[in-house]
Length: 180
Ligand code: IMP
Image 1 (cartoon, protein in one colour):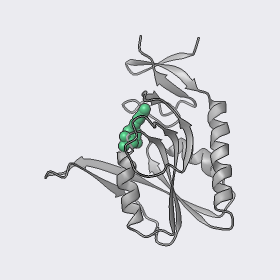
Image 2: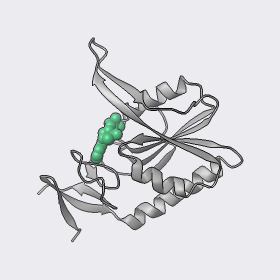
Image 3: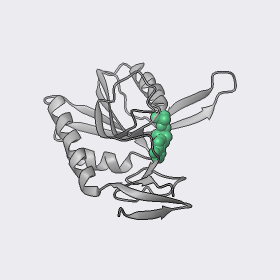
């Protein structure tokens, strides 16, 4: 039987091992190294969730690169505009750079819709997205997730940087919520 753990008040079952993660992160790094051969890349990690994925991925990058991180703050607009997502702490100038955004998970895709839109307005030479996890069943975006580690069903997961109410980011493997 799969390993079951408790995170806060919920139970989760092991779904992606550390070895599988390592293998797929290597596959993505190989793809990025090949796609950007002879070019320079600016990696922009989205905090908090991407810290572990970004760290492992970037260690395998062989093309010249710079690395920075930013946060996406989300708040309800005062008018009917709904949610407004702001990029916080982006210190690098992305203009004319080959930018690869590193995200932990693309679920509905709405967060990345806003992020990519704002980055595109800064006129990078190219803009791509790497996400460790992609949930195609809930995706509502109209952009490509260029580098996908794992496609998973629409279930809630924790581990390897992903949290449940702030907990579980430290787990070296990925666990899926367990209903019993
Ligand atoms: P979006 O729906 O693609 O905009 O995702 C918004 C955010 O929800 C992600 O950046 C994650 O922080 C969080 N999220 C979505 N699905 C999961 C999950 O299964 N586990 C943990 N966080 C999640």
